[in-house]
Length: 364
Image (cartoon, rainbow, N blue to C red):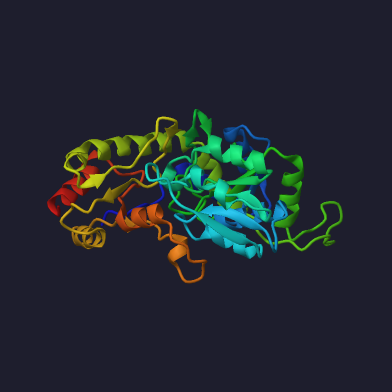
């Protein structure tokens, strides 16, 4: 079976974990936590990074530190993993959904202005499937209306917008290190910011709301959103390989581009986009199955599974699912209906991708 994604771990990760175990610092204190935070902040050229237990808690922590609460609205894309909207609901605020841009699949900034009202407090752009959002118009809307921006970069470590790393535009940016992400700590997340006040708030909230100068004294209600030293030990080793991993992701994407060109030229599929202003990191290499293909998307998933090739459908638009406010957002719904995620692990090679693309061509 060729999986959709799997982590690439080696001796460096193992040696760091062994060192952490031998030190006995295996919980939420230890040298690797600070080292991982400092390294991640340096990589993005921001002042602070705050490690968390996962990407969802990173989003919740960010919103809480910004004071998002009951009666507030936060603009989010409908085509994203549910955690983006759930973090807003955890704050007792309301997610307000916007449609996708049909070319590059992320939040369409042309839809933002109409969603802003007196209750709007923040925007969460999601750099979907490794492709950056168009940040300039998003930041313009945020500036014009005095809104916070929390970038959800869970799927886009190291991606570039106009030559600048995603995650460096918003007030706070959030990352995931789940086992299928470009770099992993198994579970884990990170918030980054250059704002000293927000950094202090997030550190306190992350650690039960405990006063930093008075142990076991809690000035506010906080959370246990801490990363363990064992997780950070893996993260330190993974971070050193991030640029290498991105290069491999882009190399494999180029193989997919080339091998699927015939299907694209025949109008049967659309390939994973990369806009002129973007450097996509292709967290998962995705295609759209156009209506001219003889099988629908779900039929292709079943046929490829029979050949030992695991694939995934796109995320469902959040707005069509039961727990959320129902809104018709047609571009996202069409992308979700057509979208197919192909195997994208870092250990794939040319031969693997040849097998995958050949199998896809045979079910056309």
